[in-house]
Each structure stands twice: as C-alpha cells, then as structure tokens.
Image (cartoon, rainbow, N blue to C red):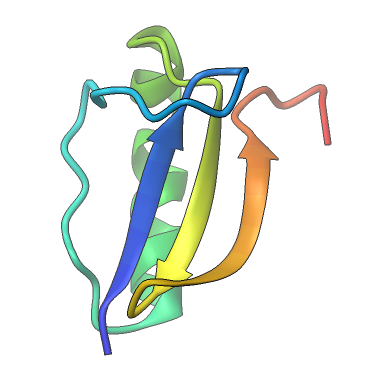
Length: 69
C-alpha cells in the first residue's frame, strides 16, 4: 500500500509543494509527515491537501489553515 498527499491551491488545483511529499507505507506515517511540514507547505502556497491510498481518495480536501475546517 502507498499513502500519498495531493497538495492543492484553494480552488482545488494541484500545486507544486515547497516540501516534496513521498509515498508512505502507513496512514499514520503520512499524517505524521504532514504534521511536521504543514507550515512550510502553507508558506509555499499550499492551501489544502487530500490523502490517497493506492490512488483512492481517503479524505480531503483538508485546509492547511489552523482556523478553518
């Protein structure tokens, strides 16, 4: 299984992340990575993220801003 993040602008279009995500072997690893780099991603222009497992959407879009859903 491969867990991956799609990094998006506010309008849902994919954007090049300021920190390149990798493929993760567990959902927990993917979420831990996001918890470590979300501020860098936000500063680099990311507004939201979507989590996928083997290409299937698990959840999202999830805002990168702490004061939003």
